[in-house]
Length: 61
Image (cartoon, rainbow, N blue to C red):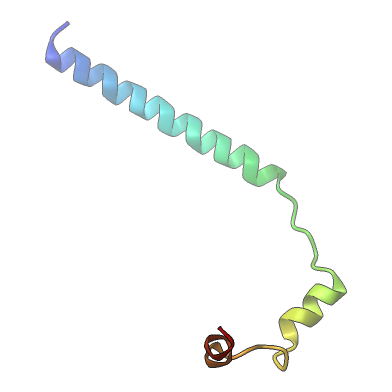
């Protein structure tokens, strides 16, 4: 096999792998369900009064 034939085979394999990867990504993304956050998760995200300043953390260390 010449080097140009080997390179051609490698390119074909890379193209096939790229197609396979995109097909797998599509299948995975299609099967992942969007889950609604729980009420306490929403509350935790929205409550800014519970946030701790980085300076406070450094002082406690």
